Image 1 (tube, rainbow over the protein chains, first blue to last red):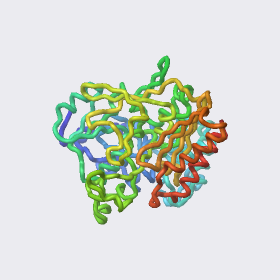
Image 2: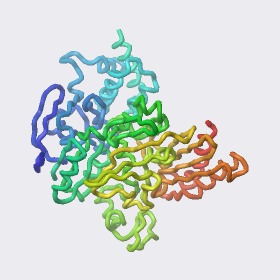
Image 3: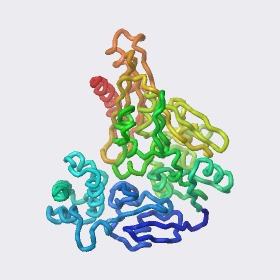
Length: 159
Length: 315
Protein backbone atom coordinates (compact mmCIF):
# COMPACT_ATOMS: atom_id res chain seq x y z
CA UNK A 1 0.00 0.00 0.00
CA UNK A 2 2.84 2.40 0.71
CA UNK A 3 6.13 2.95 -1.04
CA UNK A 4 8.27 5.91 -2.02
CA UNK A 5 7.21 5.27 -5.60
CA UNK A 6 3.55 4.63 -6.23
CA UNK A 7 2.64 1.68 -8.44
CA UNK A 8 -0.31 2.53 -10.66
CA UNK A 9 -2.42 0.67 -13.18
CA UNK A 10 -4.34 3.01 -15.43
CA UNK A 11 -6.52 2.31 -18.44
CA UNK A 12 -5.63 4.98 -20.98
CA UNK A 13 -7.52 4.85 -24.26
CA UNK A 14 -8.36 1.16 -23.67
CA UNK A 15 -4.76 0.14 -22.98
CA UNK A 16 -3.70 -0.78 -19.43
CA UNK A 17 -0.43 0.79 -18.31
CA UNK A 18 1.44 -0.21 -15.16
CA UNK A 19 4.13 2.16 -13.97
CA UNK A 20 6.09 3.05 -10.82
CA UNK A 21 5.81 6.82 -10.49
CA UNK A 22 6.77 9.65 -8.19
CA UNK A 23 3.77 10.41 -5.91
CA UNK A 24 3.87 14.08 -6.91
CA UNK A 25 3.69 13.37 -10.66
CA UNK A 26 0.55 14.88 -12.16
CA UNK A 27 -1.66 12.89 -14.49
CA UNK A 28 -0.82 15.46 -17.19
CA UNK A 29 2.92 14.78 -16.96
CA UNK A 30 2.24 11.06 -16.72
CA UNK A 31 0.31 11.15 -20.00
CA UNK A 32 2.71 13.45 -21.81
CA UNK A 33 6.10 12.27 -20.51
CA UNK A 34 5.61 8.67 -19.32
CA UNK A 35 3.22 7.62 -22.10
CA UNK A 36 4.19 10.12 -24.82
CA UNK A 37 0.57 11.17 -25.35
CA UNK A 38 1.32 14.82 -26.09
CA UNK A 39 -2.12 15.62 -27.54
CA UNK A 40 -3.20 16.76 -24.08
CA UNK A 41 -1.66 20.21 -23.81
CA UNK A 42 0.19 21.79 -20.90
CA UNK A 43 -0.78 25.45 -20.64
CA UNK A 44 -0.88 27.15 -17.26
CA UNK A 45 -0.37 23.89 -15.30
CA UNK A 46 -2.53 25.51 -12.63
CA UNK A 47 -6.14 24.69 -13.58
CA UNK A 48 -6.91 28.04 -15.17
CA UNK A 49 -6.55 27.57 -18.95
CA UNK A 50 -8.33 24.22 -19.27
CA UNK A 51 -6.07 23.03 -22.10
CA UNK A 52 -5.31 19.72 -20.37
CA UNK A 53 -8.93 18.50 -20.31
CA UNK A 54 -9.23 14.71 -20.43
CA UNK A 55 -11.97 12.26 -19.42
CA UNK A 56 -11.44 10.48 -16.11
CA UNK A 57 -14.00 7.73 -15.53
CA UNK A 58 -16.24 9.45 -18.08
CA UNK A 59 -16.09 12.97 -16.64
CA UNK A 60 -14.15 15.92 -18.11
CA UNK A 61 -11.40 16.96 -15.70
CA UNK A 62 -8.12 18.87 -15.75
CA UNK A 63 -5.13 16.52 -15.87
CA UNK A 64 -2.83 19.17 -14.36
CA UNK A 65 -4.86 19.17 -11.12
CA UNK A 66 -4.77 15.40 -10.61
CA UNK A 67 -1.96 13.36 -9.13
CA UNK A 68 -1.37 10.28 -11.28
CA UNK A 69 -1.25 8.18 -8.10
CA UNK A 70 -4.84 9.14 -7.34
CA UNK A 71 -5.98 7.87 -10.74
CA UNK A 72 -4.94 4.30 -9.87
CA UNK A 73 -7.53 1.92 -11.33
CA UNK A 74 -9.27 4.66 -13.31
CA UNK A 75 -10.23 4.83 -16.96
CA UNK A 76 -8.73 7.74 -18.85
CA UNK A 77 -9.59 8.92 -22.35
CA UNK A 78 -7.37 11.51 -24.03
CA UNK A 79 -7.71 13.22 -27.39
CA UNK A 80 -5.74 10.32 -28.91
CA UNK A 81 -8.56 7.97 -27.92
CA UNK A 82 -11.49 9.93 -29.34
CA UNK A 83 -11.27 8.89 -33.00
CA UNK A 84 -12.19 5.36 -34.04
CA UNK A 85 -8.98 4.39 -35.82
CA UNK A 86 -8.75 6.53 -38.96
CA UNK A 87 -12.36 7.65 -38.61
CA UNK A 88 -12.63 10.98 -36.80
CA UNK A 89 -15.31 11.59 -34.17
CA UNK A 90 -18.20 13.67 -35.53
CA UNK A 91 -17.03 16.62 -33.43
CA UNK A 92 -13.48 16.37 -34.76
CA UNK A 93 -14.84 16.43 -38.34
CA UNK A 94 -17.11 19.36 -37.48
CA UNK A 95 -14.18 21.30 -35.99
CA UNK A 96 -12.34 20.92 -39.31
CA UNK A 97 -15.37 21.76 -41.45
CA UNK A 98 -16.36 24.82 -39.40
CA UNK A 99 -12.81 26.22 -39.31
CA UNK A 100 -12.85 25.94 -35.53
CA UNK A 101 -9.12 25.27 -35.33
CA UNK A 102 -6.74 28.21 -35.47
CA UNK A 103 -3.46 27.71 -33.59
CA UNK A 104 -4.80 24.37 -32.38
CA UNK A 105 -3.49 24.55 -28.83
CA UNK A 106 -6.91 24.51 -27.16
CA UNK A 107 -8.45 22.18 -29.77
CA UNK A 108 -7.86 18.85 -27.95
CA UNK A 109 -9.46 20.27 -24.78
CA UNK A 110 -12.36 21.80 -26.70
CA UNK A 111 -13.00 18.42 -28.35
CA UNK A 112 -12.87 16.63 -24.98
CA UNK A 113 -15.31 19.19 -23.52
CA UNK A 114 -17.66 18.84 -26.49
CA UNK A 115 -17.53 15.04 -26.57
CA UNK A 116 -18.40 14.93 -22.85
CA UNK A 117 -21.35 17.25 -23.42
CA UNK A 118 -22.69 15.37 -26.45
CA UNK A 119 -22.43 12.04 -24.62
CA UNK A 120 -25.00 13.20 -22.04
CA UNK A 121 -26.94 15.76 -24.04
CA UNK A 122 -27.67 15.04 -27.69
CA UNK A 123 -29.37 18.42 -28.33
CA UNK A 124 -27.44 21.01 -26.34
CA UNK A 125 -28.59 24.63 -26.62
CA UNK A 126 -26.25 27.60 -27.04
CA UNK A 127 -26.08 28.30 -23.30
CA UNK A 128 -25.18 24.69 -22.54
CA UNK A 129 -22.48 24.71 -25.22
CA UNK A 130 -21.02 27.98 -23.91
CA UNK A 131 -21.05 26.61 -20.37
CA UNK A 132 -19.36 23.38 -21.50
CA UNK A 133 -16.39 25.19 -23.09
CA UNK A 134 -16.23 28.00 -20.52
CA UNK A 135 -13.43 26.35 -18.55
CA UNK A 136 -11.05 26.29 -21.53
CA UNK A 137 -9.39 29.41 -22.91
CA UNK A 138 -8.97 29.79 -26.68
CA UNK A 139 -6.11 32.23 -27.11
CA UNK A 140 -7.18 32.88 -30.72
CA UNK A 141 -10.67 33.77 -29.33
CA UNK A 142 -12.29 31.45 -31.87
CA UNK A 143 -15.19 30.54 -29.61
CA UNK A 144 -17.99 31.19 -32.10
CA UNK A 145 -16.73 28.61 -34.56
CA UNK A 146 -16.11 26.10 -31.79
CA UNK A 147 -19.72 26.56 -30.64
CA UNK A 148 -20.89 26.11 -34.24
CA UNK A 149 -18.84 22.92 -34.54
CA UNK A 150 -20.45 21.43 -31.42
CA UNK A 151 -23.93 22.34 -32.73
CA UNK A 152 -23.10 20.89 -36.13
CA UNK A 153 -21.72 17.68 -34.57
CA UNK A 154 -24.83 17.26 -32.43
CA UNK A 155 -27.01 17.45 -35.57
CA UNK A 156 -24.74 15.01 -37.40
CA UNK A 157 -24.83 12.56 -34.50
CA UNK A 158 -28.65 12.63 -34.44
CA UNK A 159 -28.88 11.55 -38.12
CA UNK B 1 6.38 11.20 0.05
CA UNK B 2 4.07 8.23 0.47
CA UNK B 3 0.51 7.86 -0.79
CA UNK B 4 -2.35 5.99 0.87
CA UNK B 5 -5.78 5.08 -0.49
CA UNK B 6 -8.06 3.84 2.31
CA UNK B 7 -11.47 2.44 1.38
CA UNK B 8 -13.25 3.12 4.67
CA UNK B 9 -13.17 5.82 7.33
CA UNK B 10 -11.93 3.28 9.91
CA UNK B 11 -9.09 2.20 7.61
CA UNK B 12 -8.25 5.87 7.11
CA UNK B 13 -7.73 6.42 10.82
CA UNK B 14 -5.72 3.18 11.16
CA UNK B 15 -3.36 4.71 8.62
CA UNK B 16 -3.12 8.06 10.40
CA UNK B 17 -2.32 6.22 13.66
CA UNK B 18 0.46 4.23 12.03
CA UNK B 19 2.22 6.70 9.79
CA UNK B 20 5.04 8.86 10.98
CA UNK B 21 5.62 12.43 9.93
CA UNK B 22 3.27 14.96 8.44
CA UNK B 23 0.25 14.09 6.34
CA UNK B 24 -2.43 15.79 4.34
CA UNK B 25 -5.87 14.57 3.35
CA UNK B 26 -6.50 14.82 -0.41
CA UNK B 27 -10.17 15.29 -1.36
CA UNK B 28 -10.69 16.57 -4.92
CA UNK B 29 -7.19 18.02 -5.03
CA UNK B 30 -8.10 20.98 -7.25
CA UNK B 31 -6.68 23.40 -4.68
CA UNK B 32 -4.19 21.03 -3.04
CA UNK B 33 -2.29 20.03 -6.20
CA UNK B 34 -1.38 23.63 -7.16
CA UNK B 35 -0.32 24.10 -3.52
CA UNK B 36 1.93 21.01 -3.70
CA UNK B 37 3.48 22.31 -6.92
CA UNK B 38 4.30 25.71 -5.48
CA UNK B 39 5.08 24.84 -1.88
CA UNK B 40 8.45 23.96 -0.44
CA UNK B 41 6.63 22.38 2.52
CA UNK B 42 5.68 18.99 1.05
CA UNK B 43 4.06 16.57 3.55
CA UNK B 44 5.54 13.12 4.14
CA UNK B 45 2.23 11.45 3.36
CA UNK B 46 -0.82 12.09 1.21
CA UNK B 47 -4.02 10.26 2.09
CA UNK B 48 -6.44 10.07 -0.85
CA UNK B 49 -10.10 10.15 0.21
CA UNK B 50 -11.55 9.29 -3.21
CA UNK B 51 -11.91 5.56 -2.45
CA UNK B 52 -13.84 6.11 0.79
CA UNK B 53 -17.28 5.50 -0.71
CA UNK B 54 -19.24 6.02 2.54
CA UNK B 55 -18.51 9.77 2.47
CA UNK B 56 -19.57 10.19 -1.18
CA UNK B 57 -23.30 9.74 -0.72
CA UNK B 58 -26.33 12.03 -0.59
CA UNK B 59 -29.10 10.86 1.73
CA UNK B 60 -32.52 12.31 2.55
CA UNK B 61 -33.64 11.74 6.16
CA UNK B 62 -37.03 12.49 7.71
CA UNK B 63 -35.99 15.91 8.97
CA UNK B 64 -32.68 16.60 7.25
CA UNK B 65 -30.51 16.14 4.19
CA UNK B 66 -27.04 14.59 4.48
CA UNK B 67 -24.36 15.32 1.90
CA UNK B 68 -21.11 13.35 2.02
CA UNK B 69 -18.03 15.54 2.03
CA UNK B 70 -16.59 13.71 -1.02
CA UNK B 71 -19.65 14.39 -3.19
CA UNK B 72 -18.30 16.36 -6.15
CA UNK B 73 -19.59 19.84 -6.90
CA UNK B 74 -20.87 18.54 -10.24
CA UNK B 75 -22.82 15.77 -8.49
CA UNK B 76 -24.22 18.33 -6.03
CA UNK B 77 -25.29 20.65 -8.86
CA UNK B 78 -27.01 17.90 -10.83
CA UNK B 79 -28.34 15.55 -8.15
CA UNK B 80 -32.16 15.21 -8.38
CA UNK B 81 -32.52 14.91 -4.57
CA UNK B 82 -30.57 18.15 -4.03
CA UNK B 83 -32.43 19.97 -6.80
CA UNK B 84 -35.74 18.86 -5.30
CA UNK B 85 -34.97 19.45 -1.61
CA UNK B 86 -32.30 22.16 -1.62
CA UNK B 87 -32.07 23.73 -5.08
CA UNK B 88 -30.33 26.85 -3.73
CA UNK B 89 -27.29 24.77 -2.84
CA UNK B 90 -27.26 23.23 -6.33
CA UNK B 91 -27.44 26.75 -7.81
CA UNK B 92 -24.50 27.86 -5.64
CA UNK B 93 -22.49 24.79 -6.71
CA UNK B 94 -23.05 25.69 -10.38
CA UNK B 95 -21.34 29.04 -9.75
CA UNK B 96 -18.12 27.42 -8.55
CA UNK B 97 -15.10 27.35 -10.88
CA UNK B 98 -15.24 25.65 -14.30
CA UNK B 99 -17.18 22.53 -15.34
CA UNK B 100 -13.96 20.48 -15.30
CA UNK B 101 -13.06 21.62 -11.78
CA UNK B 102 -16.60 20.92 -10.54
CA UNK B 103 -16.22 17.32 -11.77
CA UNK B 104 -13.26 16.88 -9.43
CA UNK B 105 -13.68 19.42 -6.63
CA UNK B 106 -15.72 18.26 -3.64
CA UNK B 107 -18.26 19.74 -1.25
CA UNK B 108 -15.94 19.21 1.72
CA UNK B 109 -13.04 20.73 -0.19
CA UNK B 110 -15.05 23.84 -1.03
CA UNK B 111 -16.10 24.35 2.58
CA UNK B 112 -12.50 23.93 3.79
CA UNK B 113 -10.84 25.76 0.89
CA UNK B 114 -7.81 27.77 1.98
CA UNK B 115 -8.25 31.53 2.27
CA UNK B 116 -6.99 33.61 -0.63
CA UNK B 117 -4.42 36.40 -0.52
CA UNK B 118 -2.83 38.35 -3.39
CA UNK B 119 0.53 38.04 -1.69
CA UNK B 120 0.47 34.54 -0.17
CA UNK B 121 -0.96 32.80 -3.25
CA UNK B 122 2.24 33.22 -5.23
CA UNK B 123 5.23 30.90 -5.55
CA UNK B 124 7.61 30.85 -2.56
CA UNK B 125 10.22 32.42 -4.89
CA UNK B 126 8.03 35.46 -5.60
CA UNK B 127 6.97 35.73 -1.96
CA UNK B 128 10.56 35.53 -0.80
CA UNK B 129 11.47 38.72 -2.62
CA UNK B 130 9.22 40.69 -0.24
CA UNK B 131 9.87 38.82 3.01
CA UNK B 132 7.52 36.16 4.30
CA UNK B 133 4.12 36.97 5.78
CA UNK B 134 2.40 35.57 8.89
CA UNK B 135 0.86 32.69 6.96
CA UNK B 136 4.22 31.66 5.50
CA UNK B 137 5.89 31.81 8.91
CA UNK B 138 7.11 35.42 8.69
CA UNK B 139 6.56 38.32 11.06
CA UNK B 140 4.51 40.81 9.04
CA UNK B 141 1.50 41.04 6.77
CA UNK B 142 2.36 42.10 3.22
CA UNK B 143 -1.22 43.16 2.50
CA UNK B 144 -1.62 45.29 5.60
CA UNK B 145 1.97 46.20 6.56
CA UNK B 146 0.84 48.04 9.68
CA UNK B 147 -0.05 44.63 11.19
CA UNK B 148 3.23 43.70 12.85
CA UNK B 149 2.35 41.95 16.09
CA UNK B 150 4.04 38.56 16.14
CA UNK B 151 2.21 37.66 19.39
CA UNK B 152 -1.19 37.80 17.72
CA UNK B 153 -0.59 37.63 13.97
CA UNK B 154 -3.66 38.66 12.02
CA UNK B 155 -3.73 37.16 8.56
CA UNK B 156 -6.14 39.01 6.26
CA UNK B 157 -6.44 36.31 3.56
CA UNK B 158 -10.05 36.18 2.30
CA UNK B 159 -12.48 33.36 2.99
CA UNK B 160 -13.71 32.24 -0.48
CA UNK B 161 -16.05 29.26 -0.21
CA UNK B 162 -19.12 29.61 -2.43
CA UNK B 163 -21.15 27.00 -0.55
CA UNK B 164 -20.63 28.38 2.94
CA UNK B 165 -22.95 31.44 2.70
CA UNK B 166 -25.87 29.23 1.65
CA UNK B 167 -24.99 26.66 4.34
CA UNK B 168 -24.94 29.45 6.93
CA UNK B 169 -28.41 30.57 5.87
CA UNK B 170 -29.67 26.96 5.93
CA UNK B 171 -28.18 26.48 9.43
CA UNK B 172 -26.21 23.41 8.28
CA UNK B 173 -23.91 21.38 10.52
CA UNK B 174 -20.69 19.53 9.77
CA UNK B 175 -20.16 15.98 11.00
CA UNK B 176 -16.47 15.73 11.87
CA UNK B 177 -14.57 12.52 12.63
CA UNK B 178 -11.24 11.72 14.19
CA UNK B 179 -9.86 8.29 15.13
CA UNK B 180 -11.89 8.07 18.34
CA UNK B 181 -14.44 10.84 18.24
CA UNK B 182 -17.29 12.05 16.08
CA UNK B 183 -18.62 15.53 16.68
CA UNK B 184 -21.19 17.75 15.04
CA UNK B 185 -20.62 21.46 14.73
CA UNK B 186 -22.81 24.16 13.29
CA UNK B 187 -21.33 25.90 10.25
CA UNK B 188 -22.14 29.13 12.11
CA UNK B 189 -19.62 28.15 14.84
CA UNK B 190 -17.04 26.49 12.59
CA UNK B 191 -15.02 29.38 11.18
CA UNK B 192 -12.35 31.48 12.90
CA UNK B 193 -11.56 35.08 12.08
CA UNK B 194 -7.98 34.18 11.20
CA UNK B 195 -6.64 33.52 7.71
CA UNK B 196 -4.09 31.01 9.00
CA UNK B 197 -6.10 28.56 11.13
CA UNK B 198 -9.42 29.47 9.36
CA UNK B 199 -11.63 27.01 11.24
CA UNK B 200 -11.89 24.69 14.22
CA UNK B 201 -11.00 21.50 12.31
CA UNK B 202 -7.99 19.73 13.82
CA UNK B 203 -5.21 18.21 11.72
CA UNK B 204 -6.30 14.66 12.62
CA UNK B 205 -9.97 15.27 11.76
CA UNK B 206 -11.95 14.99 8.54
CA UNK B 207 -15.37 16.34 7.64
CA UNK B 208 -17.52 13.28 6.98
CA UNK B 209 -20.76 14.93 5.91
CA UNK B 210 -22.84 18.08 5.90
CA UNK B 211 -26.29 17.94 7.48
CA UNK B 212 -28.94 20.39 6.40
CA UNK B 213 -32.06 20.54 8.57
CA UNK B 214 -35.52 20.99 7.12
CA UNK B 215 -35.59 24.49 5.80
CA UNK B 216 -36.90 27.29 7.96
CA UNK B 217 -36.37 29.65 5.04
CA UNK B 218 -38.98 29.82 2.33
CA UNK B 219 -36.60 31.80 0.09
CA UNK B 220 -32.80 31.45 -0.24
CA UNK B 221 -30.58 32.95 -2.94
CA UNK B 222 -26.83 33.30 -3.55
CA UNK B 223 -25.09 35.75 -5.87
CA UNK B 224 -21.42 36.14 -6.69
CA UNK B 225 -19.07 38.84 -7.98
CA UNK B 226 -15.95 37.78 -9.92
CA UNK B 227 -13.93 38.78 -12.95
CA UNK B 228 -13.81 35.59 -15.01
CA UNK B 229 -17.18 33.91 -14.58
CA UNK B 230 -15.88 30.50 -15.60
CA UNK B 231 -13.37 30.04 -12.83
CA UNK B 232 -12.78 32.73 -10.24
CA UNK B 233 -13.22 32.47 -6.50
CA UNK B 234 -15.78 35.01 -5.29
CA UNK B 235 -14.49 38.57 -4.95
CA UNK B 236 -17.78 38.93 -3.11
CA UNK B 237 -20.51 36.37 -2.48
CA UNK B 238 -23.81 37.20 -0.79
CA UNK B 239 -26.60 34.84 0.27
CA UNK B 240 -29.94 35.94 1.65
CA UNK B 241 -32.63 33.88 3.34
CA UNK B 242 -36.16 34.87 4.24
CA UNK B 243 -38.16 32.79 6.70
CA UNK B 244 -41.91 32.23 6.55
CA UNK B 245 -42.12 34.75 9.39
CA UNK B 246 -40.32 37.20 7.02
CA UNK B 247 -37.26 37.35 9.26
CA UNK B 248 -34.15 37.95 7.17
CA UNK B 249 -30.65 36.47 7.27
CA UNK B 250 -27.62 37.54 5.25
CA UNK B 251 -24.29 35.74 4.74
CA UNK B 252 -21.27 37.23 2.99
CA UNK B 253 -18.08 35.60 1.70
CA UNK B 254 -15.07 36.60 -0.41
CA UNK B 255 -14.12 39.73 1.53
CA UNK B 256 -13.35 39.13 5.20
CA UNK B 257 -11.13 36.51 6.79
CA UNK B 258 -14.17 34.52 7.90
CA UNK B 259 -17.61 34.33 6.29
CA UNK B 260 -20.11 36.75 7.83
CA UNK B 261 -23.58 35.82 9.02
CA UNK B 262 -26.25 37.96 10.55
CA UNK B 263 -29.99 37.58 11.06
CA UNK B 264 -32.67 40.21 11.52
CA UNK B 265 -36.11 39.81 13.10
CA UNK B 266 -38.94 41.65 11.45
CA UNK B 267 -40.43 42.43 14.86
CA UNK B 268 -37.39 44.67 15.59
CA UNK B 269 -38.23 46.95 12.65
CA UNK B 270 -41.18 49.08 11.64
CA UNK B 271 -41.56 47.24 8.32
CA UNK B 272 -39.83 44.84 5.92
CA UNK B 273 -38.26 47.68 3.87
CA UNK B 274 -36.62 49.17 6.96
CA UNK B 275 -35.21 45.75 7.87
CA UNK B 276 -33.74 45.33 4.35
CA UNK B 277 -32.21 48.82 4.47
CA UNK B 278 -30.66 48.00 7.85
CA UNK B 279 -29.28 44.67 6.55
CA UNK B 280 -27.70 46.46 3.56
CA UNK B 281 -26.19 49.10 5.80
CA UNK B 282 -24.84 46.48 8.24
CA UNK B 283 -23.43 44.40 5.37
CA UNK B 284 -21.54 47.39 4.01
CA UNK B 285 -20.24 48.22 7.49
CA UNK B 286 -19.11 44.71 8.33
CA UNK B 287 -17.11 43.89 5.20
CA UNK B 288 -13.46 44.93 5.26
CA UNK B 289 -12.32 44.91 1.63
CA UNK B 290 -8.66 45.61 0.89
CA UNK B 291 -7.51 47.91 -1.88
CA UNK B 292 -5.29 45.12 -3.27
CA UNK B 293 -8.36 42.99 -4.10
CA UNK B 294 -9.67 42.56 -7.64
CA UNK B 295 -12.41 45.18 -7.20
CA UNK B 296 -12.09 48.54 -5.38
CA UNK B 297 -13.38 48.52 -1.77
CA UNK B 298 -16.09 51.10 -2.52
CA UNK B 299 -17.37 48.97 -5.40
CA UNK B 300 -17.60 45.88 -3.20
CA UNK B 301 -19.57 47.84 -0.61
CA UNK B 302 -21.90 49.07 -3.32
CA UNK B 303 -22.35 45.52 -4.61
CA UNK B 304 -23.28 44.18 -1.15
CA UNK B 305 -26.21 46.60 -1.20
CA UNK B 306 -27.07 45.76 -4.81
CA UNK B 307 -26.92 42.00 -4.29
CA UNK B 308 -29.08 42.02 -1.14
CA UNK B 309 -31.71 44.27 -2.70
CA UNK B 310 -31.79 42.51 -6.08
CA UNK B 311 -32.13 39.05 -4.53
CA UNK B 312 -34.86 40.23 -2.14
CA UNK B 313 -36.71 41.82 -5.07
CA UNK B 314 -37.17 38.27 -6.42
CA UNK B 315 -38.93 37.22 -3.19
